[in-house]
Image (cartoon, rainbow over all chains, first blue to last red; front, side, top):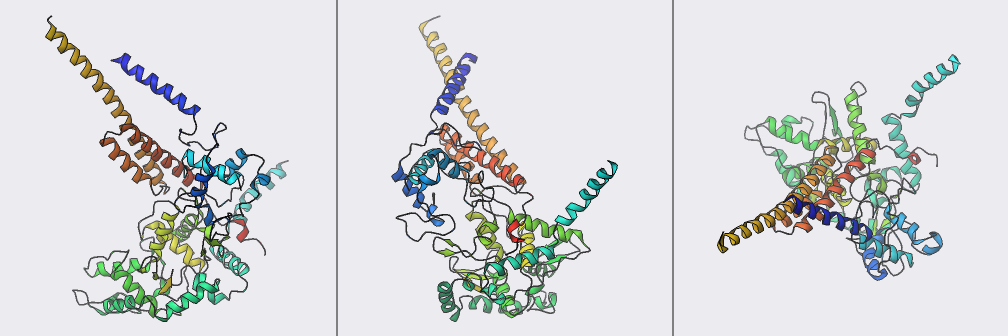
Length: 130
Length: 276
Length: 106
């Protein structure tokens, strides 16, 4: 019996290791943006999440081209690639904006797992196109 | 060298005292901040909340106020106020100066070492007369609050923090910490929306300034479709930032009401109100 | 031993083996739910519980009873992380105070 349970534990550990190699399926746990995070998301799906009140709801605070009645709390989301040196730096900002500015109002969408890993990659990919 | 040490020791004692602001200083800074932020809003307009700063929303609100949606609640409340308990006594026996007593709450209760809100005082009166306490979320208690608020219109907010009871300052400080603490999955504090972002748009809604937040309760909210209390609004805000709400009239919310109402000292009471 | 005896022994071994796999998975989901509940209570003890944590735990229990063990474990783990994050948040914010700009000059 002990051999059997050891084997399950072994497979589970192996599965855990594999899961770490595929960040899109692993939970977003951890305070900091994982260096190896996969940011190849679907911008179109990211747009829908950004506009959806129950999901990203980015429009409640930011002006985004194509969105109606945006809020005025955050900066206009435009010329993103001139404002962030890389997609990874943009991802850091969306993961937890209080790292760069402790008084930031924007929610930590990654750190607090407001987005699933796929949603996070999709939204970063969408914002990166703005 | 010893003189230098002495210098640091003295500074170590003095610095925290110099840095810690008193409630009165904090109140002055709070009110000054909103007056600087909205220089064109007269001081006696803040009680109208977002309608003091948004002319379009104000026009809609004034139309609503022509046929106030809280009128029936006031009428029901008056009926309740005048109806005797089973023992023949009435609310007026508990509150001899009633019903215009809204600006006496929240108040520090030295005997019980706690903040007493008007809701709590009404239920204490019922219990003292052998009646069941009323639920805090809706119904007769809110009707009573509406009647008392209406009768108290024109009174000035004047919350006191007795200096000879350190527990009162502690309750104020707890309320203050609650107000400024980030909470919930969305990580917002009350101040994140109602200080530096007041007047900004959240989608189509204008965020209201914290100065004026306590004057007009209970409120008919179109979103509720009925009259509700300040604590119900606290709970709603907490859930919006995805924090678990505290029970209405919990110590947390009573301390919060104590802090926030003290910040609004000097503001005229104009309840019950109507909001979106 | 006859043929029947071998069948009997074989079935017992099979039964014990599958049962123990089931038991282990069951223990794992129970532990995950208990850990989530512990984290939720710890967050609540400092006033830092989040809105949906208890709902996630209730849903995880439902899934576990319906036999969807891996889904239940994933949900319980999410609830546990919420409890941990809410607890950390409340401790970080326990001395929150007026922002400096309120005291600033215009």
